[in-house]
Length: 234
Length: 214
Image 1 (cartoon, one colour):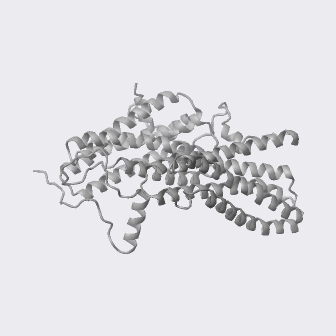
Image 2 (tube, rainbow over the protein chains, first blue to last red):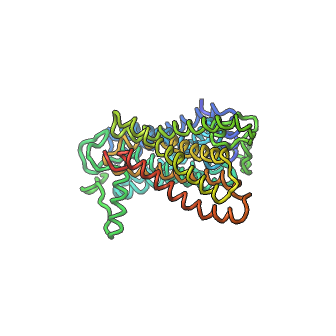
């Protein structure tokens, strides 16, 4: 069911996996393993994130994170396909999707590795902003690990940097909005009610980013959602 | 170190396997090896490419039109395609006349090929961005996000479409005599500005989302 040799290769030799994707050989097993890895790792990471609030929030976050990750991959894959084509790599769809799934598998494995440190941070009753920071850094590091597969998969030649730069921009936008729609993950500190989706109208991701940039440009720190002090562990 | 943990070779990635079938995007963008069909066969091919480009571009219109729903979906699908159609139907012929005045060595088929391939680039890009744009259109609470995403996608597609158009045209312009080349170098920037303004105007008029409508 799970091709462990593939998981070993994707960590150690992403270039070799990228070459296999491009040759379009044995990609069905790779795709299956990648999807399962993504599902397991993002569920575990979601559960760790939700453990800050505890209770039902663990199940909610564990359920929402895989939806966010897989949804982002599904929505961003066409963008990667066309950007690669426009910048000189008009490849068939299957190698491109294989490449994206392989990148997703590497992302998932790194995310899985960073799940225990995140959980430990929460267990030590770290402040809410620090937990958010650790979760974001973990996500960013996993993203960079996944990106390496795409960079290597595109091979050498003109248009590579532009493809990657534009794709990263598109991916961040889609991923950010997806995450925004499915919030909250951590849950508001001190809040008694746990909700699957927030019902507050807070604009969208773009509005929040513009607001934060505006606040920072005026020398003000952006307001965060937490009002009360974070709970302490007895 | 066991066999299982031995490092894997991390050499350079080779080209795409030669036995793979050609992707339809390769045909659409004209990136396949040039076969130089006779003009009688080339015209329908370019027309087909252009029609495909418009159809693909309309997907982006459908995506941003989802924000308003109902007839606005069709309106936006039409509007995005009409913007490309207007640039190809009004700006490119104007450029052709000026280049002919400058005695540049460009024939109608060459110009049509460049136009179709530029449109294909823009259309393909818009189609690829459509799923992401649809996510924004149906999930954000504020109108400005959809406007920014819509305008961003259209601008990016316009820039890359123009880039493809000029790259296709460049070899033809390069074989002209020195004065024709100089005149072309002056004309092209004016054409780019005109095409950008024309496309932006059409999209502004036809796409309520671009005007900030929610």
